[in-house]
Picture 1 (cartoon, rainbow, N blue to C red):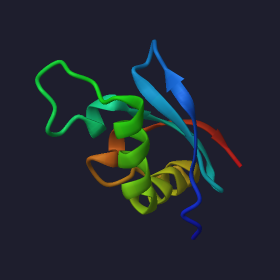
Picture 2 (picture 1 turned 45 degrees about the vertical axis):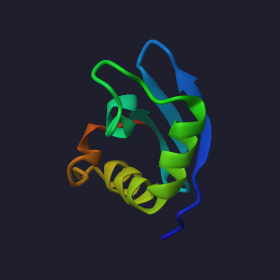
Picture 3 (picture 1 turned 30 degrees about the vertical axis):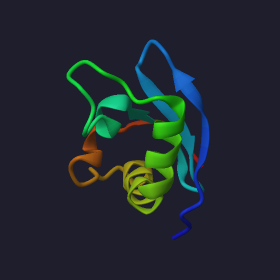
Picture 4 (picture 1 turned 135 degrees about the vertical axis):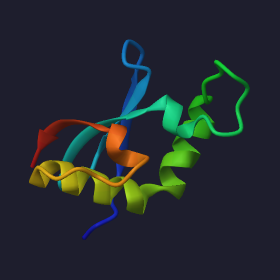
Length: 85
């Protein structure tokens, strides 16, 4: 399994970041990244990109599972699959 992840930007309406992996593309909700932030806060772009980089292996596994039709393990079960490759 490859842990290659590219961040394709933020979707304001979904309050999520779009990522692409070898298995497909998905939205990662900002609430996953919000630990340590004040209530109602959202991560800065820098914080989000750093969080995604630090969790790339788990995110890649979650997208791979979603692409196969399986449910990822919590807390990654809240990712939304956009497309399968």
